[in-house]
Amino acid sequence: MNNNDLLAAAPLEFECAAGTFALAVPDHELELLFQARHEAWARNRIEATKALVSAEAYQADVEVFASRRDSNRFAYAGPLSLSWLLSDAGMVEYVLLLAQKAGKSPRRETLFAMKKADPDDWQRLIDVVLRRDFPKVARELEILTATTNGSSSSSPANPGCTTAGTSSHSREPTSWA
Image (cartoon, rainbow, N blue to C red; front, side, top):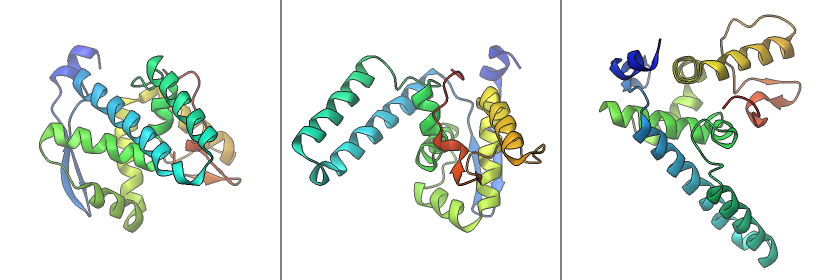
């Protein structure tokens, strides 16, 4: 599928126990919104832990955040962005943006509840999103999962799969952008 096909593609309908919602094809606006949400999430984490760290540590965190923001390290599909996408919080935000753009959006709480109540649906959603919007990431995760498990995986992308005490989504990607 080339870029023109993606632009013309209709939203994908995703059905699960939590309901049915559409997943729009990402565009430049959605990419910028995802980057903005990621930046806000990162800054909010710094503020949430402010009372738990020294003033020097807080200031250092703020400076690292500012440096990353100013050098565009939060850019869509860059290493930081993909690392966040493969976290539960990042995937929920991405799915919400896709669904809002398509006009059939679940609530954030619904997605987090789905993750807990129906992990198979949650994994299927992750697989659908990664295969369509980040096929290189999906392929790399297949390879990682197959290598870690010592066999080929029946699930195409398992970013939440834990093997040998580590989860594949905890590693920051370095060459997928």
